[in-house]
Amino acid sequence: MHQFRIVLTLFLFISLLVAPAWAEERLRLATTTSTENSGLLAAILPPFEKAQNCKVDVIAVGTGKAIKLGEAGDVDVVMVHDQANEEKFVAAGFGVERKDLMYNDFVLLGPISDPAGVLGNADIAEALKKIATSGAPFVSRGDLSGTHSKEKELWQAAGVAPAGAWYLEAGLGMGEVITMAGERQGYTLSDRGTWIAFAAKNDLRIVAEGDKRLFNPYGVIVVNPERHPHVKVKLAEAFVDFLLSEEGQKLISGFTVNGQQLFFTY
Image 1 (cartoon, rainbow, N blue to C red):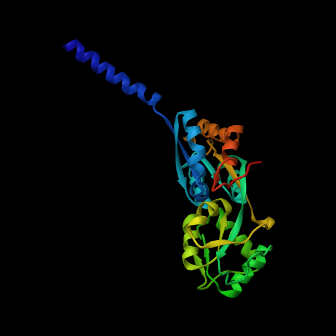
Image 2 (image 1 turned 90 degrees about the vertical axis):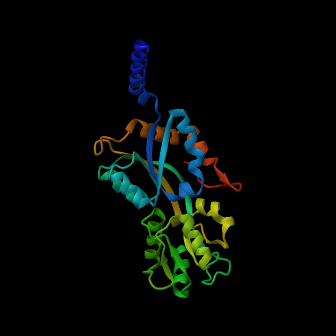
Image 3 (image 1 turned 120 degrees about the vertical axis):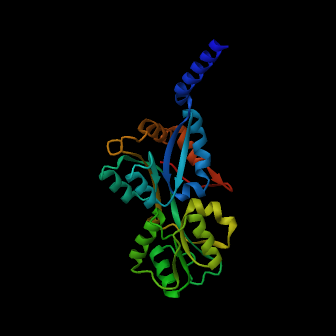
């Protein structure tokens, strides 16, 4: 019995030493609310997790916050949609290299009644001017996300400094902002992917689209291990390679909601 206990103790001790090697790795991904709200992540992550025997821990926030997480070394990889700030992130030494991942576009949403009279306007700046002049509600992300960054750029192009009771800064994710705009019968700027996923849940519609300034590219960046040595760089690189592989790109371009493609690949 005594020998059995010794053998059992040794077995348990060795098991504890070996167990970490068998445990699945965890990859920390900071990404936008649009990739989560649209359902894209649920389509593309499981095949990668299965192939790598890992778990991807997702932090879905606005692009600005996602980049801050990368700067702090709190994540291993960043997948966002604000190219100018992504390039600054890399130039400052926080990211290894920005790689083009996919794209869609932004759309201006508004109520069926269209109180500002912007329906069908091909010039997004003119559409925003009409909203500001009318005083109709406009719900902004207000969260330093990629969508918020694009919105501010478009207001500047329109020559409007949005302020007042009509302009609401929500500080929320895209899905929540679409819902809020619907409840207030107001306007908002959305990425097309999230809009398609939420279109059946409210009374809004697309009132302006197609302006070349509404192009919405997404990039993916491995956090720089020279800045943050604890980053799981090999797993992060494997994730990027998977996303850019034929399999990954087909998963992205093949993802649809209600028969509509949400994201496009290069």
